[in-house]
Image 1 (spheres, helix red, strand yellow):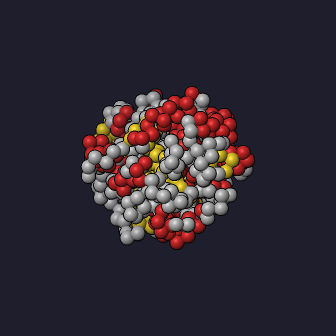
Image 2 (tube, rainbow, N blue to C red):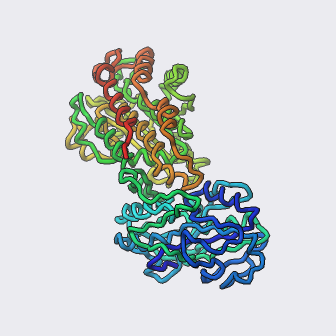
Image 3 (cartoon, rainbow, N blue to C red):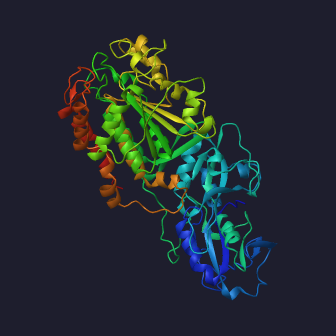
Length: 607
């Protein structure tokens, strides 16, 4: 348990022939197994961590394992006659940051309740190395929601005491079914307003012993730690000593400190991103909020909708994107040039991140949109071909069966729906363009999917719009009614979890693609996504060469707009069959916005 005053460490003792494999296992899984010191064979002291130590007697209780089975717990290992062939590994411990949490005003519930910390075996597998492979073990500390940022910052600054959390929210994401039944330690109860926060745990090493089945091994008993000579004070964070295996690494640049954002209510999920990445995504949000068409779109702006949508998309695995606004009901095709470019830009970045992407369209437009997708792939605008599907309202359960395998709400087919410049249903059941003309006869009821998703845990929705009549803009319906022309008639009644507003909806799609790129190149976010396992630092070369090709560009967007024009798709505001979107010519307006988004995205952050 936590002892105030000095930093603590977990200990694993293994036969010499397994030592190199275990060291590699630690390096492959740095969050649960931050290696402070590896002893020589038979060495019982650890001078970098504690003077005059004897690891055989300095822990209050040890576990003894034979062939991977716990055979006994003992208070001393001094009688072991095989010590000369054993190697000790000292691992950072999260008890080392509990004093710092308390000093930051964050309650430490396990200490308050006089209990050992709760530890859980997860369904997340560590990266294997040699003979070692096992599930990740985590600790859980209940943290008041208002203090999550403080808890994240304090622990982020202690990377060798497991660092920042690896998960915040519903334990089911980790495969933990019941918080009241920890696999190690004792149950720690959440208080009203608390959120379960999970840190990687050194007990993962015990799971590694159990799975690798060495002939003989020892460890600390969970909660009974080795006490170092390193003070537990803000000025003395636990660091790997200069003669240990790990480099000293104690201070993070402020702009790399993670910030915490809630991205889902059901199930509960928070995500992390560095201050630098957050600041850039907020700059993207500012750029796309410009209103050269003077439509008054700034009145609908909600701070951080872009950021939260990008975080949720980064956590997703299967995304359905829909677009299509048949505003030109007197032309064939009736669609406009706003929407498809932004949809394709998002699809390309999502595909690059390994997400499954599906495009959802109206039945009337299937043949045309399939041809547009095929040409986008041929021209290198879209990374790869994606499925194109339609939705037909064939009954009360049609949306549920479309969204979920076999209509089972516990098995969603998609975990994120994105609508960009998609006609949105008004309160009277009709669909209106900005002039107040009803175009319902040209629109399939894709809104039903967004409505159904509200009651399906695990499906998040995003709407991107520039006028308030687009699918998803129901989240800001009151603002649309009160502040937009014809707002009481045209306002979309169907909300999305996140409503991204932009001067032109395409810009919102470009910004999502750029935001996903920033999160992909954000070490804090990537560590959180990967649960601190198998980390490979993203190098500048990776950032600047491989991933910039997946961003929107002036050349790609100009090429794609020309494709739309070739298919007879017109500018939204003017109905011109020309290189323009919403009455704004591609050069200089749209090309300038794209260039500025890229400049923000690719600008280096100087520590």
